[in-house]
Length: 481
Ligand code: HEM
Image 1 (tube, rainbow, N blue to C red):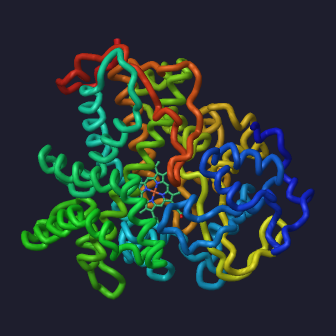
Image 2 (image 1 turned 180 degrees about the horizontal axis):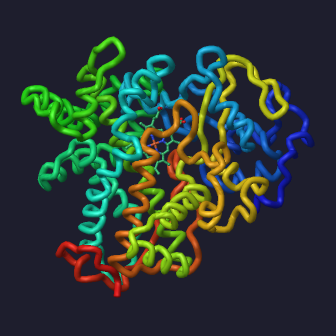
Image 3 (image 1 turned 120 degrees about the vertical axis):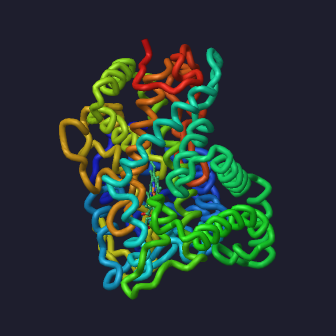
């Protein structure tokens, strides 16, 4: 459904639900949960068309975020206008709070991860984590990103269609492992990559999810409590051993003081009282960066290829720009992909005090979902919103609270500059070293994959031709002839 058919003030047409929350579908929870599970993006489009800029969905939290989310409320208020989203993301935590809603990740990332800390601990941790991710600093990883992408293309099959998503996961995992640990030895990179891949695949696999569900049903535990369950301990043990081993090795050698990789910088960082991060805190931040730093970027890259390969004029322009060393058009392609196909369709916050949003007085305890997927298709902000048109980011500034693929405010993605650089560099490197075609002319559908939106066929492509540089030997600025 085309959201541009809607108006932005339709909330007023429906009566307020009995509990004082904005209106939403009257379907039973089981049916709404099914709609979310099998047709998430289409369900959102329909709700927006029917109820307007603010609406309430009643969805089983298990369906939204898996067994670890069991303590969450069923009802969530979806926000799709930039002003309500701005209010929620910029609200000042102590006086008018928004508590963290990432608890469903805690059994994996640990209790001191930036993702699950509330204020003021969150802000203190964020100050330590941000320095390695500033724009200037992340540019140091550009060469690593280019090298990893070029090496990867060398392994891709020719004249056979394959999904790009797993290939992008390999690239982004290698990049983040090298950036975090500063290691260049191929066997060490391969060791970390294999451990993490195994853990991540298992964590989203049917077997682990079933064992977690049983643990929830048997014990009534949720979220962080699942960290102590046997399947979770077995899942994390090899990765934890490797991370603690690396931290111990650096402490023993003392070489972290001279290194500038992310782990070494975190080991050098000091809080305001002068204390360093403990080994447990370092472990939690490392695993957070490794998880947060690769999957979303891989899905976004698959989307970027899925979109540009269906626009030959954009391909030509990207290749031409890569030859000159300019970046403006590549950056605009990245931003437009993040606008039209955001990997994380919603953000989530819990109101800790009442808040007036979109004409409704929402009580404390309400969970609100600033909806990136819908606000970025808002025709009032983006003319012809469903068209893939990177030029819109060349001609005008990025609208702050109507472009929220990285969230906003005090919890905005720490890796936003890193991710956008990586997307542009990988896109340009691949496109200038091989000729790709989409396996079908028709674009891929937006498909809900756990908490993300990914291309329905994983971004299937066929390599038509590679340059010799992409068949093994290193390339120095060579491009497709
Ligand atoms: C295209 C790729 C990425 C997307 C779309 C993305 C998106 C997001 C979003 C929406 C949030 C905020 C969640 C919220 O407000 O609740 C977030 C937080 C975060 N992201 Fe990313 N991310 C990406 C890549 C990365 C990378 C590459 C890294 C690190 C290397 C990273 C590290 C983090 C961290 C540490 C946080 C927590 C920030 C805080 O709570 O203060 N992300 N990300």
